[in-house]
Amino acid sequence: MTQANKGILMPETDKRSLWKWALLTNVLGAIGISLGFASGAKLSADLRVYIAVPAIVFLNLMFLVVRPRIVLARTLGKSPNALNVLYEVLTERPILTLVCGLQLIGATRSTATTVKILQMSTTAYVQRLPNSQSIGLHLIWAPILMGLVALLWWLAAIGLWIRYKWAWWLALILNGLAATTTGIIQLLKLNEWLFDLWATTAVVLLLLRSIRRHFGIGHPQSKPVEVE
Image 1 (cartoon, rainbow, N blue to C red):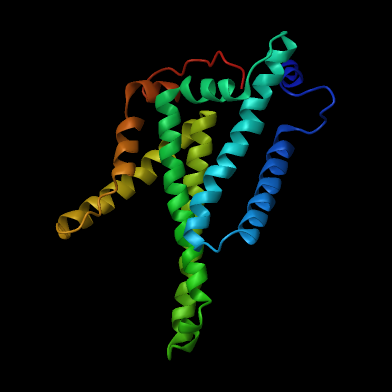
Image 2: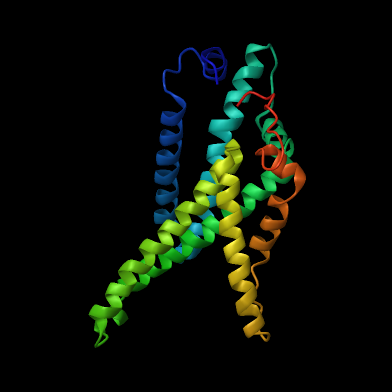
């Protein structure tokens, strides 16, 4: 992005860089959501994650994607509606948006699992077990590993949205492993539904020619014409 484009996307009175806006948006969003949970009904840890993640994603879309486009439109003498701009953002690359959404599902599930394991490790039941020390050690490493997996899902979602080539490979590996693993388990337990339909759908979409063209996989990468 050129300096001229940065000047168009960010108001003259706004001296914060994009990454500072991202940090500010997520910190304030996390504080607001935490206050909402503290003052509302008690919810399970995983349910809080499933509520918090869409809220954080929505805030990032509005402040980091929709807001710059509104500023740009206003410099051109237009008066855009925020919801209309959000609709345009989500529908201008529908398949890619869907793929990013599938990565967010993986990130949300991994984050929820991490939180549940952390919560489980602090329960009185685990502390009273005879082998609580060895179990506690496993419960220390388990959320660390799951947290790293969740971080990879988040990186895949964000990288795909920004159209980084490495994100396509990362997403393909993550979804491919998830689909293959659950597929094998499904064959071993036919009486239960364990197959990861989300990951399998993501693999199929990632391999589509239109998606691969976005990232220059097997085709020369076309230069984006939109301002990002």
